[in-house]
Length: 336
Image (spheres, one colour):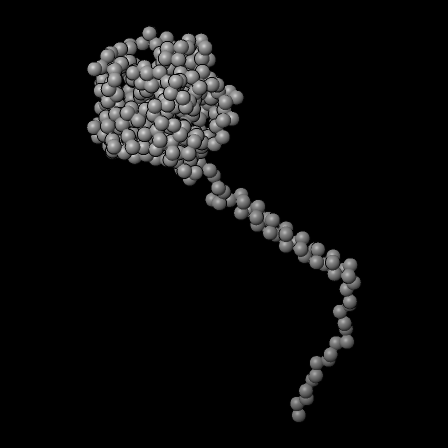
């Protein structure tokens, strides 16, 4: 007969842990868990696949090939802005020298302030309309008009008349939002990496459309100073070294051409202006491929001399152009 063997019950008992031993046990186990987790995190963080790298965009060179067959600058006097712009551009070889069929063209007027055209704080809408019209005639696929305004952008573009002028010429106004800015390598002595609207990187050609006006800090706002409107962020910090900032900006942005509005000139209380008593009618449009020479020429409208504007000599030293505009091939004509 089979016998059944019963399992003998052990009388051994697990020793009771003291409170101190229990806490030590928890601490050891917790340390092991953290160690394993830390190693895993370290290995994950070293994996280049998961590292987040913020890209930095590079500026294009929007210029066209130089030519000895045409002047470098054309000064046009008159009262009909469309005819003056056409004459100036034709003097430098015509719009098709600069704009190809299918190009995406960006126009950069000065639209920094909530002001009306008569106050001359912004580029005149007639100039924007005339240049956009020429670009469309040349077969541009699209013409964009943009600026980083200091006052409310929608009001600036509306009250300046530039929004209406652009739309009537078949151009598109592009007001940069927070999500439109891209970190961009400026490569300057002072300016390194700054946010720039992506529209500049998407464009094939860029035309600078500044206005001549007084500026309380650097004496004048002309073509090179107009590039302040391509950067976002706290750009007022750059005012402490404003002349170097202007040179850095002009070194970074190489436009296809620059067309200066000197039809109305804000002679005092710039850059915002406000009083019509500060505005002078000069009835001049200047088209140039040398922004240093252009700015040096435009000083006459503000009763300034080149040695009173440090950024001009600094820009020439940086190889951006020549202060002595008379040494260049310059034409001057009257239209109408």
